[in-house]
Length: 287
Image (cartoon, rainbow, N blue to C red; front, side, top):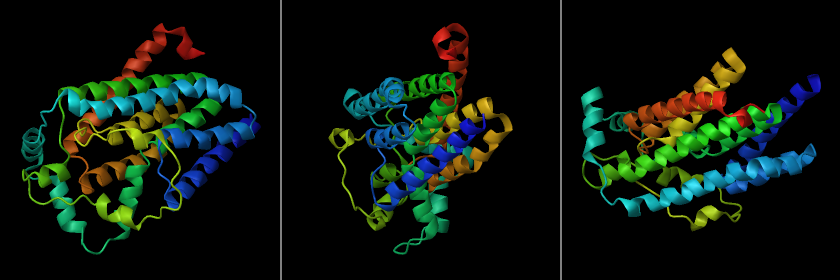
């Protein structure tokens, strides 16, 4: 038991250290790249065959989802700009992104929190994959349930992207629908190093700039939070500050409206509940 606990702690530090190294060296955190980080971890504990068998379907699901996400704009070319703007104004009386940037963005100078927000944004894949790896080490039934939940979440979001393509604040501003919103990532990323350009399938995939509703950058961390509470009880609350940091960063960076984040929370919660229901009906999820 002590050895198992030590292994979890050791690989938690390993994942944090390697992720920090990738950010420091300017290596983009894509699922296929990160797979090799986790593969190395499985080599160290001599569980490589089990890792490949358990993880290949998971990685395939994430990569195929991102491929389909790039197709969404071609399936529905109508972009919703005004709906989200009107909803934000109805709820808050103003656009939170515009308010945050007016208070904290001071171009041409960048502050420390601009870079922190950027790091939060680009941990989008690292956090769920790292969490999945720790679940895989600790309990394979937990890991399977998490894979099912994140798959349901990703593909239900993709269906929404097709039905309701939605513009993020920075794009709505570019099109003249709202006052100026700066795409902060265009400024901060220039200051990050690019020491290594490692190959990735993601270079060959089309990005989808109108996949704002729901925000998966919001939904993935909240899904992890729900699983943390379910599996680890009150200890899961330690993950809450990270979630709040992500949500604030998404709005401040101009990448999402608050309503996108709320939708992401709803989708994550629905996927989590659906997985709990499936767990009672599918024996495979409990082994």
